[in-house]
Image (cartoon, rainbow, N blue to C red):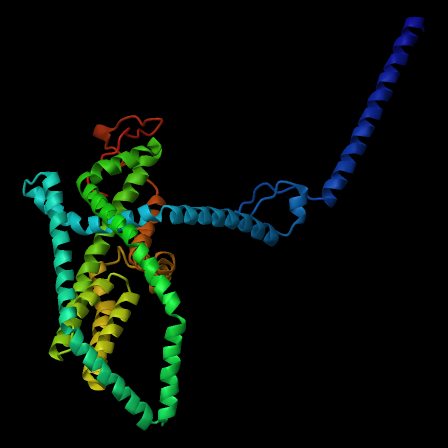
Length: 434
């Protein structure tokens, strides 16, 4: 064999030997990798049943329940921080937010009257002014009648209260408790001492209350101005707010806003009707049994009915207390029975029938909302808490809905489908939201 042939044979043997060594090394590496994958599972990225996925081997070593708890924990912390920040902002500008919420309720109450005048060809500004001035006159007139009757009947109630206190003392002395005159005197003296000790606190509270007169006056003016513009320019205000959202989201915001406004209007109308029926029922009982302050107590029942559950209970308790002081136990028990009957009819018949399923809420969130409103903003908070929950409930339900698919075209009017949905640039609101 020639030298060239020997060289070619050696090169061929060297290439075969190197190729075999590379193949052997690769097989050995594949075996080691398979053994490692068998001992340590690969990270899970997705599952068919929607379970929580992991993206690293460290996550794979953490139990699934602990991963879910950690995910919920940091999300709840973020939500809590956002809620805390919103509460701080609300507390800083509550002088503006609370009157706006009250103005929304008044606008929902007065919007039907403005609509009637508009259909009668009144100018929008004139119709709004007439309705607002008429409502303000009705409120002022009612308050004037209440104050006048209260002033006229106060001396009679004071004498009745003195006689009632004497009857209570006689019952404590001669009744089952058998208290002696010395014990009664000690209890009365303890009450007087408590009043004397807390007189400074009571005085400071009165001064603080007097200091808020300017704030209350400012809030009342803001309520009037906001109600006027909500009634007159509510449509334009709503279109402006909807236009601030992305084009693709405007239809959802418009639908949720219109549905929420209708819910608020239905809630206010139903609450006014239920409050009127409650006031008439309890007022008839007060007049029949000649209880003093029948008209002021009726007005109190009407106003307190706007605070669900809690308001009716408190106003009924005040009516029973006045009946007890003036007419004794029998009259008080009769008034208590009338209050209980009226409230049962309200809760079991009027509320479900008048309000309907559109604004029906479970009593538990109603009580929680009223309690939170009282803690945050007192009477005003209790007044706006339940309608706010009803509006948010409707808005969330509408926002979570999918957009209805357009009807399929008939063969005669079939058109090729558009590759992208056509969303209008401006949203026209046919109703009159605030």
